[in-house]
Image (cartoon, rainbow, N blue to C red; front, side, top):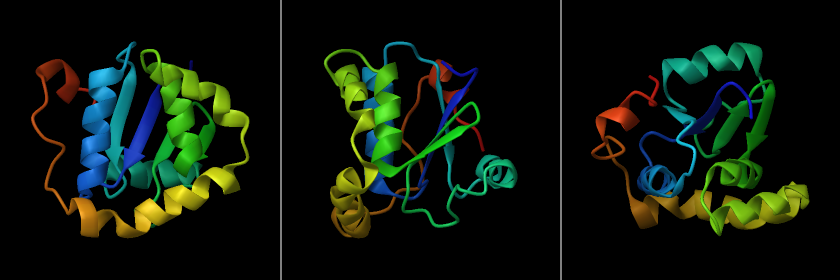
Length: 133
């Protein structure tokens, strides 16, 4: 694993907030860090990784010097999860364009279905330190 795997997510998306909470409940190693796409951490990372989109409709995993977008980000995050969820990591070799068809559809309707939020919800103190600005 990289020194730090960082998930960049839409900080105002209700679905994204639920996904982050789900990851926190199902992770096995507690080594992931999180930052909103709208934040200063992401802005600083874009200098080194220009492939990180300016738009907030894409989940991003920064793992060392590699950047994974959309469905590939979730597949690479799955290695941090407990079974059976971590088994999804085996599908990281599937072509991204096929997996992203469903991803893009959900991204397009996420605000209509899940709404917007101001924060990711209540976090335990040991989780709070893993969230970057």
